[in-house]
Image (cartoon, rainbow, N blue to C red):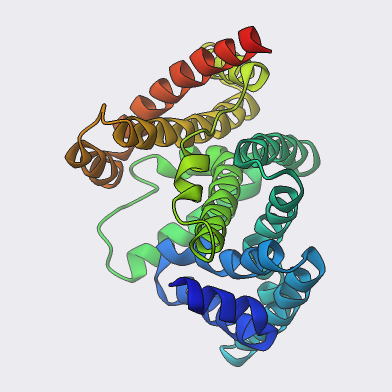
Length: 299
């Protein structure tokens, strides 16, 4: 998306509504990687215009998605819930970014919001394994009907997936919201400040307090079998992974990391996700701690 198109979208709410609704349909047709795209459009409108305009775009797109759900035989409220999930968090973060001009603060608030979300899910809906097991078993049966080779029941994955789904839902919500915000900020910067987004992204950090909380929660997850502890640890792992990616981009910009290595990191994130997430989270923790220490000393 070039800067002329981004400015045109921000100046034409009707086009922004249509584009948001269209992008929101992509994941429904198997393009799961596109979940963060619809939230970027109203977030861009917030950054270039106002939170009110962004909210109106999101509301219009939500109605379109509810109508689309109805036309394919699903209840319209499903479309509204889906819209709230993919559009709501990016809107809130974009409004915060517009006021604070700090991507790091947005990441910190997103992590705190995710922690509150996962605690509330556990507190209000109870044991995740009991809540999700019927849905996961239905999914396993549907996979077998479609001839897929994986047998979730036989492999013992039903209980594992059910026990961890609250955490994965929360991590996915936070990461999708941040990716939508990153894309919106990149579009905005291209309209008048080329290269500005990259400089801001490279300075992402959780800060000393959240960094310490991340270390404690991850260590506790190895010593405890409580689902809530594991879910909070997953959330911090995801956040530290983003900080690690930001550090990799900063090293590349400073000439300390070859561009080929940066590409390799992204490829390995797809091909060997568990190992690379852990590696990037470790890098993110060290980078966050060192920069937080320097920031505290210079304050």
